[in-house]
Image (tube, rainbow, N blue to C red):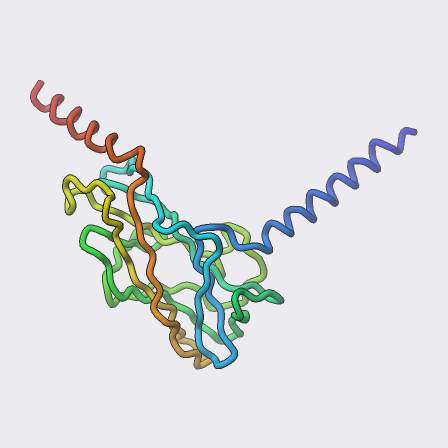
Length: 207
């Protein structure tokens, strides 16, 4: 009888480990997934991505407006496929190329370096083994910013677009992916808050 709690604990740990492994085998929402097709061309797919992506109100004075790491970039994992895409082979060095950005929409790499149209952001150069957040070798989140100083009075009624493609600068010789576009708007509940914050700041100045 005394062994029963120990046995239950072991079984519970095994179930939890299996569930976690299962969760990490599926790409989370809001992520573009990169792989290679049967012709050696980089491809992109996404899993349950809402269009457009909603950015929360920025709490950082350096990035006025709406700011978030909502959009994720992933590799197809080893032993898995996504919409006919296969894992990237050793020797690849995949980068994200920014093709175009609507006025007022800005992008920064994970350490806040600004990127503009024509710039590239290095992504990965190794094999992906899971979708675990923080696995930098295959899972990347750039920062997206809707700048309210560039778009004063912006209400989100017209989504802002960014167009990208994956390119390979390694030794595998993969051809570039077709362009893909993500669109962004403020979270609806935050549009009024931004205006309220501006009014409060104006009042304080007058006082």
